[in-house]
Image (tube, rainbow, N blue to C red):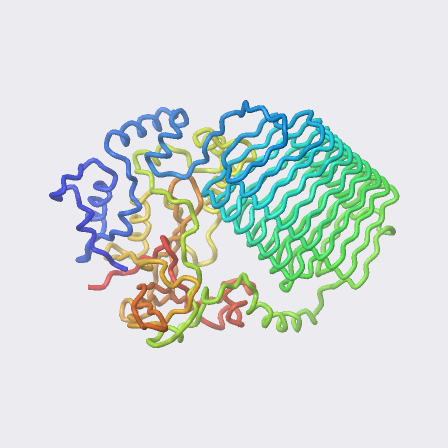
Length: 615
């Protein structure tokens, strides 16, 4: 899509727009740096900061004084940034059973302390909220026989942040249940810190937890159940069918007595699940851990067990149908059971794993039907191709062959909707004064009110680490945090005669579409482009990289029944895939391998590709 932006105005336009706005400045920069007969792109200019001249000057001054944090809510609102709200302490008193429905963004501090019996229910809590932030601190401390139920909690939400600190500490009896929790959310981040510490016989059940969730830091369980006594915990249907969601269990069940933890159907059918168990069950007594159907039928996936059950007494662990992913994952057991007494570990029908380092008390370990890597795995890989083609994580239409791009062809369209929070670029006069480095993370945390181990800290670090990652062989990349930076990078690769394109809208997403009129950019010749994809960050941030040896197409997309035009799509075909990973989703979907086929895909909503402009 190339769109005339005359309607948006410029510094000289008769609509009276101030020449001192970021958008007016960007138009001038476009005209100075891009030499083409084509008009500016309205789509691109829509990413400019909405700040007015007065706010721009005010926030630029605050940035230069390192004082933006003092006005963060106003800054985030005015500049259209992604920021979590600051939660004020809750002073509410709740002496009786409570039922919270259609409720969100609350701080429950010292809630339910010393309660005897009763139950609290959180149902449809934060339902469909875009950025729910909930804090449960010192909830249910020293309670007796008190139950909590979290049902349909924060479903269908985007960028979830929930914190359970010292939840249920010192409680006796009772049970907590998380059912339908964070189902189908985007970027979940849930932290359980000192959860159920010193509790006696208080059970927790996580059922249908983060099911169908997408690409988040995941869940962190730190000092969960520490010094607990006879506290059963069950994780059932946890992370099922999720995409790139991980969990960290650090000092979980430390020095607990008679702990009983069950991980059942955990991470099943997920895409690249990652779970880390560090000092899990350290110093525990007579604990029983069961991992059944754990990460079964998943794609790849990585688990790390470090110093698991260290210094424990009579610890029992049973791994059944563990790690039977259809594409080989990685499981590491390091210092597992070190210093333990009376340990019993059983691995039954266990997936491929080659790393048992410093594994203690090997005589207490039994392996039954353990899958070892061998040349025969190649045959398994071929057989898995048919499974992979139907794997839900290879969405139909996400990747396709160039031969499909011809008039009259019908094909499925993937979900091309932008699931990121809506944000704008910051003007250069502000972004240039803000740190942008992992070495400056403390400064960034202060600016954006990101506490330690919070979602915002993880979001910022993930973006910075990806930006600081060395480029792949043959790749030229740059993270751009201003519109001017993107123009600079695109013109440095392609020259000043450039055009930027994206798909018009999201019509046809997750449906079948028909290809109408189609045109190859630059006459359909092999060319190079600069593709830019959004990264999650408080302000708009794009990861841009040069893509050599491609063909770019524009096509009218039609309703296959009425033949009416519903969209105008931009597709890019990568002709050289020799450096791609054999487990890349494109090869799982199309049934081939690196360098053997070309791979095409659509440009998703709010992503873009730059090419040499046509006359």
